[in-house]
Image (cartoon, rainbow, N blue to C red; front, top):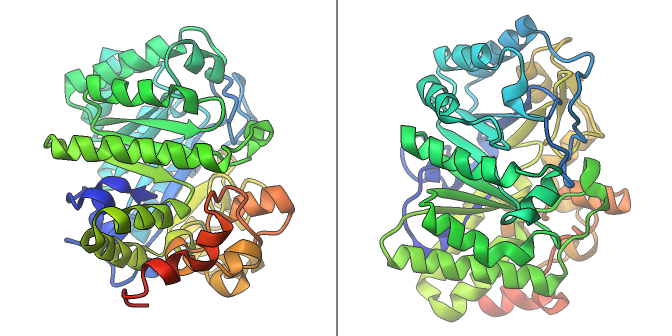
Amino acid sequence: MINLTKLYTGLAQPADALRYGQGHGASSSAGQRKPVVVWNITRRCNLHCQHCYSDSESRIYPGELSFEQCCSVIDDLADLGVPAVLLSGGEPILHSMFFDLASRARDRSLRLTLSTNGTFIDHEMARRLKHLGFAYVGISLDGIGETHDRFRGRKGAFDKAVAAFRNCRTVGQKAGLRLTLSRNTVRDLPEILDFIESENIPRVCFYHLVHSGRGFGLQLLEPEAARAAIDMILDRTRLWAESGISREVLTVDQPADGAYLLMRLLRENPDRAREAFRLLRWNGGGANSSGVGVANIDPQGNVHPDQFWQTHTIGNVKDRPFSEIWTRSGDELMLGLRDRLPRLTGRCGHCSFKRICGGGFRVRAQQAFGDPWTSDPGCYLSDSEIEHGFRDSFVELPA
């Protein structure tokens, strides 16, 4: 996850300690951080989204964790001291014990965030989420009007998502917009940015497409379209900052965004580029993400390197606590993810930005080529930038 607001404009952001080693509670290095845990508490969902990595439907799935098992997971995560737990799904609000689980997590002082399609967040639901102490509610919006409804598989989903943002704002619950960049959604990007501004949404995450679940059949953006999208997002981020608005603007699942940002900053503001380089180097990009700073627990209790790597399981919390699975894993893939740079091949292996990008998003390479160490097919940098971009542009910066 890359905070464009922080790196591009220099404005302080809420998670600077976690992402960039700045402020109270910062780790000495990114690789020593406890993982943010994405916990899919149920697979059941009322929508049928085109890009759903869990391939969820509106039905009951057997074998999901019992309430008692979920409580044990909560206690274990709290004892481990993870920085945040993201409740996801399916649609997590559909879990029969959603409020009880959130209440227990609150009582154990876990920092809770929520990933939701927003269709159930009326005024009363927003009030309950605020009372439960959710630090953040992420509401998915993948286009305006019919674009979103078509992507989400249900007419009226857009109107309910818009109402969710407004209900959260009314009760003082922080809520943000989550959008997956794909060929199906990027055409609405200008209108999405206008919507963020008009609705005064304080946080927005732009996810790069990952080919998991139903998302396997979707097409990645062409490199020029990806670059144009990031440029458009950066342009608006700058305008917001110049207007005195410290809106959190983040991109997710493509660490190459950091390299692209650095090259743009060098043209516009070399001093800012040097500071951004320092922060990105501390963060490490993909090298400190999946299997290191990000973990996933699925509805059946299986533990994965991240939520998109559902095809690889390193243990199950029904058998052993998550803390033991995560810290004592001898799994070959996990060992590789925790020391991935020497294993990288292809474009990622000889990329001049390798130490700040960290090799991109490894699960995309696995999904596309059956090899977790080869090139990330979602990287939109040119061959010339891969080969010379860092050496030509940042020769005066510390290695």
